[in-house]
Amino acid sequence: MLMTALALLLAGPAPLIETGTAVPADQYGVEVVTSGLDQPWNISFLPSGDMLVVEKVGRLRVIRDGVLMDAPVTGTPEVIVKGQSGFFEAEPHPDFAENNLLYLTYAVGPDKANTLVLARAVYTPTDAGGALSDLEVLFTADAKRNSGGHYGGRIAFADDDTLFLTSGEGYAYKEQAQKLDTHFGKILRLTADGEPAPGNPFISKKGALPEIWSYGHRNPQGIDIAPDGTVYANEHGPRGGDEVNVIEPGTNYGWPAITYGIDYSGAVISPYDELPGMAQPLWYWNPSIAPSSLLYYTGDDFPDWQGKLLSGALAHTHVRIADPNDPGAEQYEILRERKARVRDVAQSPDGRLYVATEDQDDPKGGEILRIVPKP
Image: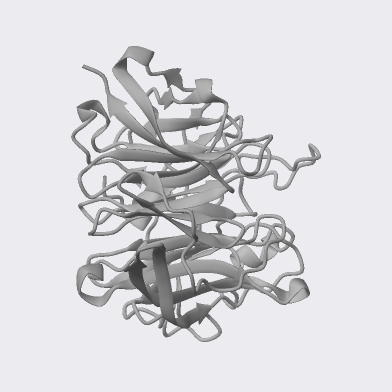
């Protein structure tokens, strides 16, 4: 569903979605691909058939022919692991088959001034797993913090060889989300070399950072692009008020001036959930599901889910299935019965659906699951 920024701004209050309906267990099955992972954060796929899994603590793992290789990929960057910081994504460039480039997002120190970076490296498969070489930092966010919260760090490649990068507002720096001279609380649009992409809305605005595509975000943890070019992103609200947004250039999504949530203490963050010039989300979740990654599903295994958004849920331990073309419609859930935090939802090139989960009691109890249809 394409919506212009004007349509978003003129929209009334967003639909409230409180719960989802469980998909009957006889409609899908769950296969465990591998287990024993340390906080798996991201799944990606290589043309060879290998699967890459980022572990937040700083490792990149290889699953080959359905087997987790013992040795992590060598040559990975040094990351700072503090609270929510760590290693976030490792995504192949769209032309990986020709250039062997992996794009990486992670947090770097020093401890009291750490921030988000985008890098790339050449990936080479090895008998033991894989190796990175020629690591190059492409972009460092102007969002230094002394905390370990709200990094974003998700990327999505567009058809024009640009990429979108989500950058959280650092939790303690929420007011910065409304300012255009910082990368806190923004979605950025970059070239494949990490430069501001041509056509960005603030590229000629004095005092604004040219990488900014949209602003007023809290902690955007998922982003994906539909086949028609629509950019969707989800983001954590505070206590309630998680959002799913259509991302339009130059648009202000309101945080913290407007919000459907309250502070974790119960205090009011803002008395407003609407203000002129600030976009409404497609919908908001209350109570919070703590959304993680976001996938626009196009696979054939589950025809009823085609064209739907699949969001991981950390707090409510499920995958939420929602229709962006009908924001107020009933939403559905899978995997709640496993009681595991869903960190990533990914679709392989052949259309199969995979999920990365975390064990709430065992940091090394993460799994990669394949969701399969039942006859």
